[in-house]
Structure formats: structure tokens, C-alpha cells
Amino acid sequence: MKTTYLSTSVLALTLGTSALAEAPSAKAVLENYANIAEAKYQDSLITAKALQAAVDALIASPSDETLKAAKDAWLASRNPYQQTEVYRFGNAIVDDWEGKVNAWPLDEGLIDYVDASYGLSEENDYAALNVVATPVFTLSGTEVDATNITPELLEATLHEADGVEANVATGYHAIEFLLWGQDLNGHGAGAGNRPATDFAKGDACTGGNCDRRAAYLKAATDLLVSDLEFMAGAWAEGGEGRATVMANENDGLVAMLTGMGSLSYGEQAGERMRLGLMLNDPEEEHDCFSDNTHNSHYYDGKGIQNVYLGSYTRVDGTVVSGASLSDLVKAKDAALDAEMTGKLDVTMAALGKMKDAADNGFAYDQMLERGNAEGEALIMGGVNGLVDQTKSIERVVAVLGLNQLEFEGSDSLDNPKAVFE
Image (cartoon, rainbow, N blue to C red; front, top):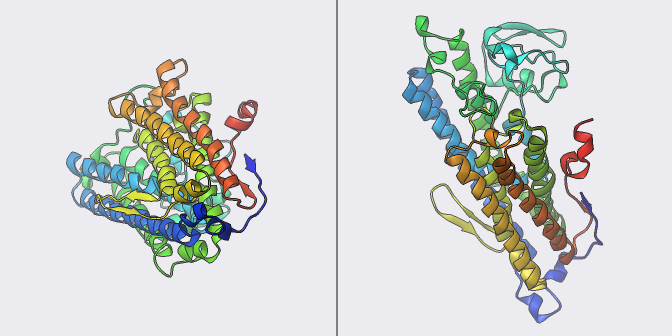
């Protein structure tokens, strides 16, 4: 989806008429945008550190209780992180980094044991490498000593090994797989069911190589924490992300709307929701091992909404808010602001309905089953809301007189026949 408009000085937003004089400055809007980014990444870091502590406790004393606590910490960590994804497409520092922490889908056989039904991949020679069980292996013609599983090994050697994007060795989803294991239920009820004894010591160990599995889990979790420390710092005072946004008002507003439109349309409505429904494939779930996809979709949508409204509720309940895109648009075209705000509400209601259904036992992978009319209606409610709000985002771009701007697209929305070619 491409939207092009003639460039107009952002200063026009605050000059010229009495109505415009009521608008906040673009600088104030961008400062609040950066403040919210900082808060979101701080919350992501806080919850990742809680996950890190839970993982350490699991490794020290594997049990059903410590495994559940680690899973619960992982689930809690997803909610603030997903709300950061709206910063991705318009900000190069985030987009260049995001693949380290949230890449999916992944060939989980790269990491650990998988079911015999997993099979080999014609596109990926390392789809069943099983690093946990293989301390020395050859990668792209070079022998790799993986005796010690470290964050450096995961990041520099294994992640996207051989240039294959499905070789996801780091981030939330690698950790998710190690905590839950494969979800072998297809469209049936249930998530992954890895036993706590997969991390046990001595004869109690199941799955083999429990010490290496624990080492991989710890390395991946420690790396996630350090990656989030970097990004939280990038949006603090003096950080690169904040400085880039504040350097040019026009470019900063373009970044905000590019993030909103691209996540709304091509990424979430298309690649994360419509595509999976077209393929009826439970492997197209964003959080496929834990059956947490409904929450990931919901909080992605929430992130889009809170950028427009300029308000974010932190994990401790405090609110970060200030001058917003909504304020700017309202000063130019109050009817459009009402339209945009209303459509965001409609989308969140649809995503909330999907989330409520999943929270009450109708999991997202069950919704994806071919012929499941209720599931299709729940998913398409979200898709339709996201697509419709993108049309209003386009109008916001025009009203604010911003320069050339392009949103991410998706074959599932723009060229559905291509999905099956």
C-alpha cells in the first residue's frame, strides 16, 4: 500500500489561523512519542528481567512450579513488548534490531529436539540441526565448537545461520519454544507441553542434554535482556532513537504514521492474521508454542492506538501521556480526528472480542481451522478493523501535509492469488 502526498512544512500546523494556534507544536508531539517509547522499552526490560530471574530459578530447581513461573513471566513480558512494535517500521534503529528479539516463524529443530513428524526442509539445511544435542557441527563449511552455549554463539553464529531467516536462534520465540516445546495439537486444544524434567539434572533428565538445554535457555534470556537494555537506552535522553526523531519534525511525524500504517495494514492485518487464515495453518500463529497469539495481536493493536492518542499505561499502572497526533489532527479537521479515534476503538473492540474468546478456551490455532465460521469471523473482525483504520491513517497523512510516505503491504491483502502460487 503506497500513499504519496505533496510535502508541506510542519510549521503550518502551528501557524496561520486561530484554530491552528490551539494545536500543540510538532516538537511536543514528538517528545511525547519518544517518552512513550522509552517507557515501553523500559517496561519490556523490567518484565524481561523478571523472566530472567524465573529462568534462573527453573534451572536451579526444575519443577512443575518453577516451569510454570517461567512461562507466566514470559507471557507477562510479551504485553509491553508488543506495544512497541508500532515503532518498528518508521524508525530504522528499531527495524534493524527487531529481528534479534521477535523474529518468527522459526525452524525450532535448529535449537532442540522435535517430533518425528517435523521432517526436513528443502529450504533450510539446518532446520533439524538440534544445537542442544550437538556440541560440534559444521555450518556453511566451517566447523563450529558449541561446547559452551553463550549469548555470543546464539547471536553471532546461529541466528539466521546460512542467511536463512527461519533460523531464529534468539529472542522471545526461541525462549518460548524452550519453555513450552512444540505445540503438536494442530487445530485441537492445548499448547506445547514440555516437561520440567527436560531441565532436570542426572538420571531425572528427559529429552537428553538437559544441561545444554538449560544453558541455551539462559543464554537466550540473558541476550534478550541485554538487547532490551540497548533499546531502552536508545530512547532515553541522549539516545540515538530519540535524537533521530527529534532532529526533523517532518521526518519524525512521518515515522509515527509509517509505523501506524505499516503495522496496521501489511504486518498485522496481512502477514500475521489474514495469511494464517487463508492457509488455515496453526504454524502461522505469532506465539505458536504458547497459544498466546491473541494477546500479541491485541497489544499490537493497542500500540497503534496509544501512539495516535499519545498515551501509554505502564505495567505499574502509571500513565505516560502528552501532546498527540490526535491533537494535531483535531486542530486541522475535528471530524477526521473523531473518525480516526472511532476506528481505533472499533479495531480494539474486535481484537478484544478475539482475545476474550481465546482467554475463555477458544485458542487462536482453533480459530484458524478450515470451516470454523466462528473463528474466521473473530479473526476477520480484527483484520477488517485494521484495514479500515489504515484508510483513515492515509487521510491523516494528507491532512497533516506530510511528504512521500509508504506503508508495508501484504500479498494476502493486495494479491491473494499469489499466496497459493
